[in-house]
Image 1 (spheres, rainbow, N blue to C red):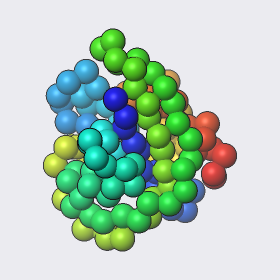
Image 2: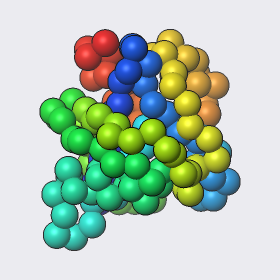
Image 3: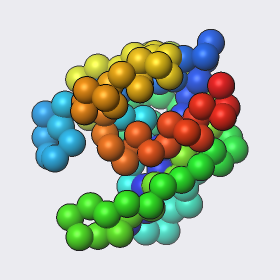
Length: 130
């Protein structure tokens, strides 16, 4: 399974969102993104995910880094890309909240075990961009 995360950084803060109370990772914070569907390239998946989950358009930039992990016996590949918001009128559907967070705040959420573990694997790559 391939998935992508769109990392939006503004004023040294990163956009994160809190998942709805559903599934194994419910109510945890994450970097927005999702699964890459058959026939999609990573950039298309990210644009689609932001439109579906937040009702906003983004422009996808450079590849940041990735992580491989296992979930329910499946091998997963998570790839992160820089992204830029092209709109500000958020309409959240798959999350209960979103916010801008400093990397230190994200590290604290990881320590409290309230951040999606696979997304936490991306923080070293994000720190290189700050």
